[in-house]
Structures are given as structure tokens and as C-alpha cells.
Image (cartoon, rainbow, N blue to C red; front, side, top):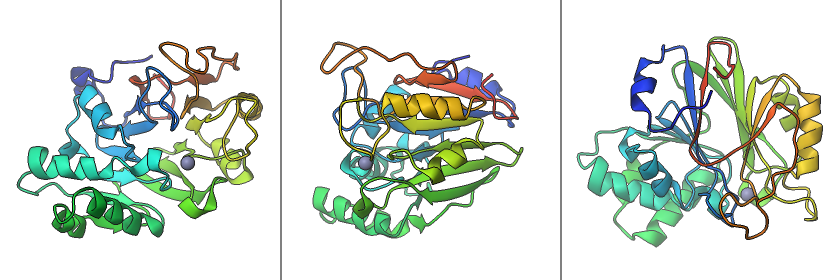
Length: 271
Ligand SMILES: [Zn+2]
């Protein structure tokens, strides 16, 4: 069942064992019509990446940037992290003026330097103190979860990773980051009940660094018990720029739209 991502009352009624996953943005780097950049939020306090449209997505979902305590970075391509200076600036001047809300940023080695550099370029001097206060980690320590960051197949210079989130109840979910098909990713997806997977390019684009519809079909057949949520899509949602046609996929595939929300029960199934 889908719930509206701004349905705070429903969220407040959820038993603590349930997990809410909000797809705040579902588009690839080129912003297909009707979509913000791919952007995921978990239980209204963890976000995956911080794309240029992150602040717009959070505003639309009525989530304050100060409520976010953890950011999991997949890689440092612009459409995944260039929203970070705006996110920090908003906290500094609007939602966390006292600077009391802790923030952990998790990712590979390059992440701290690249995000700090971005902030210095965007707002010289303004964010230096905040950058010092951030808890920069490889992998965060979060109640209810054990998390793993793993290498995926994408442009190596941006240190591409996926995130696997193992829930204390014994089930796992995953975010692919940007990646073409690769064993590490596909083997992990088979162990998950719920996986958010990128489908960045149409069939005719010659690259193996993103999934195409035919890859998704193969993956879906390989793991019939996993629900695959497609994100980072090239398909327009509003008016056609490239195309609004969504290919036919097996039953366990959901082509994502901005604002889709999923509640997962204590076995990681959509309820
Ligand atoms: Zn990328």
C-alpha cells in the first residue's frame, strides 16, 4: 500500500518495528519531466545522497533539514551531492540556528574532502564551522540497523557504492547507488526483501555503468521475492522529453515516482 509522504499522522501511528521509505526524487541527472533527482529518505531522519534538488524535495515532503541526522553518500557525482551546500546553509540560517542538531555523513574516503570543497566554493567561509561539527564516518552506527557500504560498477573516480541496510528484525533492504549490473550488487539484492535500484539509461545507450530495462527484467527474474523500486530513471513522468513510456516489467518491479512512500513491516514486506 502506498501512503502519501506527507501523511505525518499515519507515520506517528506506525509501530516502531515498521520502517517508512520515501522516494522523494526519482529522476536521473537530466531531470526527466515531473521528477526531482533520485533521493531517498528512511524513517524521516536518514537520507541517501544530497542531490541538487534535495532541498526542494524535502520542502515538498514537509521535512525540515534539521530533522535529518544521517546522510549516506553513494558517490560524488554532481546529481548525487551538489545539494549539500544548500542543505547545510538552510540548517545554519533556518532550521538549526542554535547548531544543536547532530549530523553524521557516511561515505567513502573522498566524501569529506569533496563535500567540504563544494561548500567552500558555494559559500566561502560561511559553512566552515558546520563542516567541523559534522561526524564524518565510513559507515554509521544507527539504532535498529547494521549498515554496509559496498562497491558497485560505475565511474571509478567518484568512488561508487551501494548501501545495504540490515534491520535488527532480520531482514535487509538496499540502495544500488549508480551502477551497472555487477555480481556484488545483484548477489546482495537477492538477499533483500526490498531494493531501490537505478535504471539510468534507455536500451539504446551504450554504457555498462547504468541499468537498462533489459537488465531490470533479468534482475527481477533472478530475485522474484525481492520488490525492486526503480529510481534514477530516464523516463518522463509529466510531458515527453525523451519518452513517457514505461516498459513492461515483471510483477515485483515498481517504476518509481516522486513522492512514493512505502511502509515495511517487521519482515521487510510492503504493508
Ligand atoms: Zn553517477
